[in-house]
Amino acid sequence: MKRISLFLIVCLSLFVNNLYGQDQKREFRGAWIQCVNGQFQGLGTARMQATLTQQLDELQRCGVNAIIFQVRAECDALYESKFEPWSRFLTGEQGVAPTPYWDPLQWMIEQCHQRGMELHAWINPYRAKTKGTTRLAQNHVVIKNPASVFPYDGLYILNPGQPENRAYIYKVVDDIVSRYDIDGLHIDDYFYPYPAAGQKIPDDREFALYSNGIKQRGDWRRYNVNLFIKELSEVIHQRKPWVKFGVSPFGIYRNKKSDPTLGSETNGLQNYDDLYADVLLWVNNGWVDYCVPQLYWEIGHKAADYKTLINWWNRYAAARPLYIGEDVERTVKNADPQRPQQHQMDAKYQLHRQLPAVKGTVLWYAKAVCDNPGNYATQLKQNYWRYPALQPLMPFIDAKAPKAPKKVMPVWTEDGYILFWTAPKAKAWGDEAARYVVYRFTKGEKVNLNDPSKIVTITTNTFYKLPYNDGTLRYTYIVTALDRMSNESKPAKKNIKL
Image 1 (cartoon, rainbow, N blue to C red):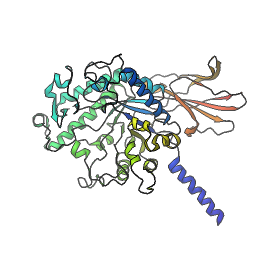
Image 2 (spheres, one colour):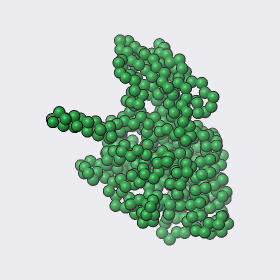
Image 3 (tube, rainbow, N blue to C red):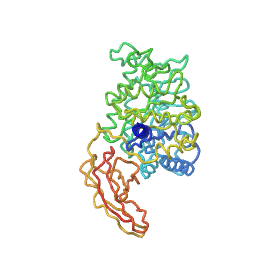
Image 4 (cartoon, one colour):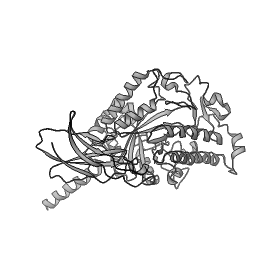
């Protein structure tokens, strides 16, 4: 009886470890880097690059494999644009180019790819002016075409009811996608503006002109946003099929009191009713490639309980990869209701691992991670994201793996003992190797490519410097190729003495 009990305890322990502590080989591990908070304004080129380098290095140590970088906050640009002015969040004055000159988006792409990270360009599609902006450049859309926007609570908004505004945003996005080697195009939760007391959206003219027989104003506004999402997805994928289109909506779709069938047990602002964003339609119709609901609340929040919402999104938004938007600071400021002596990070990550549709996390925001409140970054390094992770698969874009790397061979060079290989042949974009994964196994150890602890690097290079010691220990190195959608090739194997 004691032996059986001991056996059951061991099995239970293994089950719990697998459930909560098992490392994920495929997981989106993102972080938002925003400009709109002014963290880069007036820094100048050298200091901004140094700040970003410091953040990227720390995020890489934390296991982050994707950066979502804000490049268009108010119909402006943190990149070289022929359509919109340089952002004041970069130089301090809208329309003024950075000095010394540089292109932050291009620089970030290069820096992220060197670190094995994806770079997703983040735009705010409709917002044309934030509350703090007092001067607009002469080539800004509000100055060039004032009828295209409406004022609302200190903002200017590109009117979603005007077809020409959709076309304008498509032109801006197509320019970004065509000229930059981005991995994703990302939009956040700003569709129709967040409701403000005493404010009315002035779209009577557009409703009269473009209602298309839709009787209810709310249905018509949702139609405008739905059409925008569908067509924007088509613009992106027609230009580059591999660029992932992601959306990060507000964390509540609808409350149950508004929709007894699909609503969540919450009581807050709603995507569907207040922002006119039918996020489930976009996910279930495949118009977006991934969805990142902003679940910034804590477990136990009275109006928007985190646990309730993550379970809701897991249930209803599984048709596309689901990543969870996490507020780092709020997570560590609130105690775990079940374990009041500690904050909520562990409880939240346990929920991530339990829910099958949840394929990753995006951290709000990068600087907060780097500041390490509540040892959040330390826990990522030592526990949750200790080992590298590949991106989740997206077979609806491409499911075919590239061929294996060729000519895997260790060579002595003046820089040391280097493992070289060559890229596999490719006939189309889906066959091309974009990155490589290098695994290492000790002599006699079973080769298991599902074990991320055996990954020594994920790299864009076709070489890896070996940690040579005295040549007495034997290792098996495996190199695989990843295409742009992270489909993994068959292994190429080499036994090496180190």
